[in-house]
Image (tube, rainbow over all chains, first blue to last red; front, top):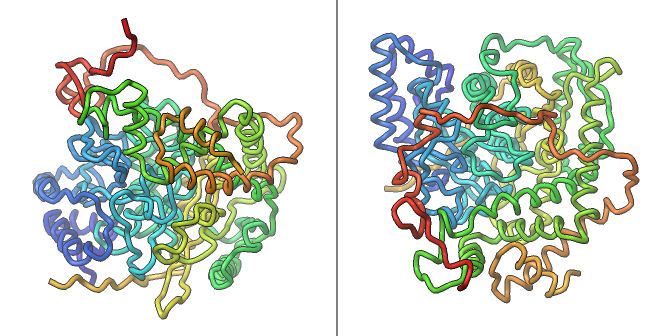
Length: 501
Length: 100
């Protein structure tokens, strides 16, 4: 028998509808789990205990009156601390935003609240979502529930760890180059990076605006669909949202694997991949084959440049987006202590004090590639290669030209690495994103689903598989992934040893 | 390898006050990262268009009406400016920009 906090959205929603449990029971069970293991995992920057209990009682009243708002009504969900929450501190895990209390909700947060969801807390991340391990958080490093000596992945590491350790029912993350998929993979949960523009970015602290996407981190594919149903769709507050929208995701998540055409890009299984991880992925592909899927080898040759492209475009946009932190309007400011400085000094001292190492590194890198004399050599070239990367995906999926339905790759070249293993070497850290970063410049949707385990230091570590679909084919991606998930039927859970006392 | 002067010039453009040890650290780290980019030096990109966004959407416009939605328009200066370091009522104060 599952504890309440271990339930999926579907399971909990069902029990709430049947009035077998209350939302208050559910929230209390999640808070109890937080109480037990959060000291070890450190997934949360803020726990919204009092508000959550109050909201649960309100949800229960609605349920009693037969006015349940949606499948997430009364369900406790954690939110990456990159999304603005009205009246609730939002820090992006950065010192420069410590104490920042937004005056409005991100559209995603507002839509979840309107649907009755309960915000159980704000989760840790690499500051401003810059990183692959949460070690770049200015406040704390989150631990992987499968082995607390290891990182949970990043940047949405707090969200993934909170789902994997059942300290919430589901979570919201953001993905600019893998920040939903990689932590989902390393923590053994489901993480969907939707098509660019499918989910509003309004109220999400911007990292790289042409790449940023918001999406669900959940225990099952079906739960991801339920969340997408609520958060996706056009938003006049974000002009880059695309029109095709919602109400389509949780209808019927079945798919006929038999006869579907799956492309395996050889570049994603070449040097650098851990052989045990490779075996787990190949084993999952073999099962898809046995279920009647047709698997073909394809080539995405520009992939080898995608890391460079990503680490030019992304810091360029970061350097521009982070200029808003100027010490004048909000956030850490030297003006709070002294009023005898020039405007220029207020800018550079506030920023120098407030930003952490990785944010500074990316601001510097972005400023460099955009500066006169380097713009053509780096930034312009990167935008051109971005065209090649995108065209290769489009061509691979072009059905009129023998294209495939889905592309399958690993998510991360290795299982979760140890805390401290890569934190001093930015290039090594960047290389851990090699299979996820090519996706964002192309804008296509991709998901990480758990497909197996490898063993390290006598501990099981989860391995995720990336499934990529054509632009706007988020629904088909979820339907296919749901079938693969059912077929593999992975039920293992991490055992986090409780805190003493 | 980037020079110390290049790092200082970039930091000035980025309005970042760096400590001496940070200048040295970023000189090494940025040089390593930029080394990675060598792989794109010789790609033939003649006639390849640039992609800066992927949806193809352009020129979204709507009427400039004041919305009553409280999530879009918080309830006035107190709520809007509660994070501002230096202000006078609803006005944000900055250091003097132009000397007499």
